[in-house]
Image (tube, rainbow, N blue to C red; front, side, top):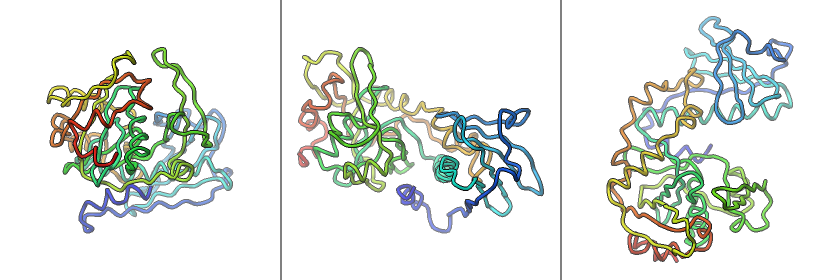
Length: 333
């Protein structure tokens, strides 16, 4: 989570919100419960991605107590949220490595809920930093934005920002949101990692999956701190490899349409929000009130439409094609 600290430091130190997360050992016999009755008849929140579930089981002296299961079949953990003392205690069974992952989730909630509540926007996009400026890639699902980000790291010496999600600040600052990293097999080589093979629109896609830490250590990728927005590339698949690679400036309507699609991330926003006040963050309604509409969000910099068959992206001459719209890319080839 250290990569998120610079983004939060955009605010003046006096504006910082103090909240403490304590992780403690806890034995199941002390009330954690087990089995299928854990959530029966209790207020429940089920989060996207993996079946994470939380249930409010009591309020005592201003302290909200919850039970939580990180994934199906995992041991339950206990969360105790004391809003007056600004403390959240995470009580985990000794040796429960899966339960400890709630600590990472709570840290993400702390940062994301406050950024989103102060006007930042989350986009389904990938991004890299080139010469201190963010190059943001927008595309539909399986449209090739991750492939371009990983190619930029290899071909342009870019710093890595995000594989799947980025946050854009009101002043145009771009920060990568930590998620699992999916590298095309052609670019990952023989690197260790979990391999995934699927057919998308008749095309076989092979990817190697890494955690951010594995991505840095295994492939030697350098991650970038937050940088100002520099350019936007909208990827449109041609559906025909023989069509080659073409790039042209994106008009305002095309850019706004692509940004609106990238901003439609309800599951991701729920996952990183704080609907139960676990880390004292703004509620979803407050976050929505602080968010500007996506129209014009990325309009202050050059924007290109890149047309290329998705299966050609790992080796197509994309940077040469983009130089006419984003000239500063040519200096890095």
